[in-house]
Length: 472
Image (cartoon, rainbow, N blue to C red; front, side, top):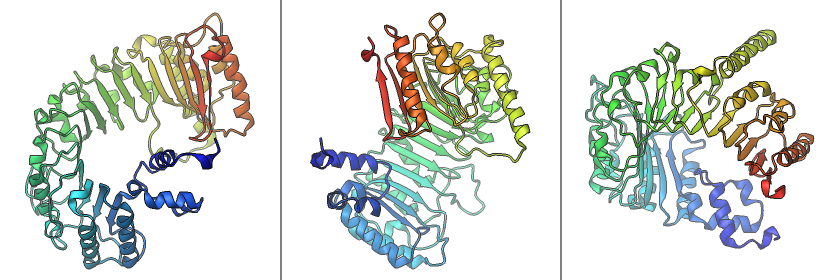
């Protein structure tokens, strides 16, 4: 079907997916064609993210005009509103910020707000927000509060009155009794005015980053399914942590051995660890008898020796968000990497008795992992059915890796159903065509077995797959 003949409904779905992360349509996309420009300007949902941010680039009058245009294109659709009053630029004054807020209140009443991210770092400046915005938050589904405002001299580990200009707006939110589903705090403590929100029965996701969470009662969240906790030292002894119900998916940042020694994790089924420290100081492996899904970042395979989770079905070993590269010589770097590879191979071969995790689905970033090391890992997990690999440029996917899959006597991952790879070569490269031939041979070798498909992609546009039906 020629691309110009696609129905408008499909084009709308494509564009809504393209901007699903909240980005505003770009000028480049508007220049593709008259049809694209028309769709971009007439789809209100593409313009629902509205930022009143004093750190935005441009002169105050430019930002003001930009806000008016976005609200005009958004029409009556529900909005995702960002309010950030940091005043870190010389061009902006408090008067400019208030002018933006008044424009927002005039063109987009709070009944139209679907979500609100509010940052009130610049405490004590300006008119209280509830004096600008009138009405009720009838459509609000998500609220994120970011800021560190508290009364001078107050104990930041205790709940207390919030002194920022957002205080009155918080009271309006509570009085509106919105059907909130997501509630997030990145604050020194939960603002006193917002504590009633903790008792809203509609909340299903709760994200908290603060020093103390002792004033949280999880029994108040009958629909709570996800919680993110940024652990500090005080969390290790917090009684609240030991009361998290088992049905809640838990993400723990800055995981420590003190946390590991609490009873927090005994009944947890889903656990994400995005940072960790001193885990090796824990007395014995961390026992997680009910755990079903484990994600570790950074996901060094050697860390698996510190976990005893025999019920895990889904395991993700991901690379760090911001990897720091230290200035060392190439010789030292190679020696260090060789040492890591050797220790991983030792764990999965010689010290296999220390492994107490047997996933069925494995997602893994192959950063600095050699093909030989990966083969040693996969050989220890014959139960794997789904394998998702993100290839590093240094990983050789044409050597021992495919050969072991095609071994007729002792094949790698004999129960494998899906092999999904993110590759670094593009579709026009020699490697892409070479892997296509290798994948065909793998499918033929596994003919009649459990392997259903091999998928590899470079990005959303370069994707190819082979299915078992072709060879069965």
